Image (cartoon, rainbow, N blue to C red; front, side, top):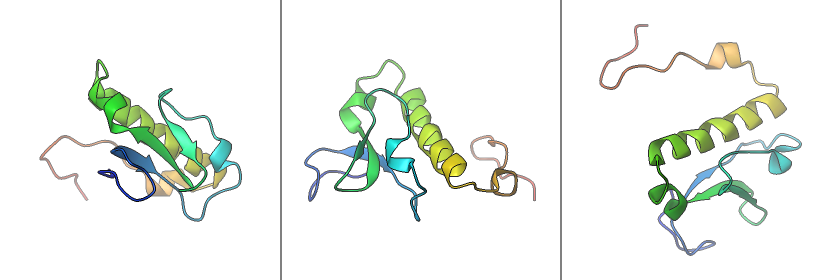
Length: 95
């Protein structure tokens, strides 16, 4: 989350990949309010779009998951080695 200031004058959620895989800037991500900012070299989702959504949590998770998926697929990440099942709040995952 970025509260605004500097390169953007509005609060926003952001997502980037480093090193940026080829094609990441052109990746199709969701929701519609998300976009790639050429100057920042990252995807942005304005906070107001999330705040005003019917289901803000789902909108934010859609953004985070779609940008992660784009980076992982384009970067040819070993997702099986990186990922684990989503846990339950306040319950540590077993090792």
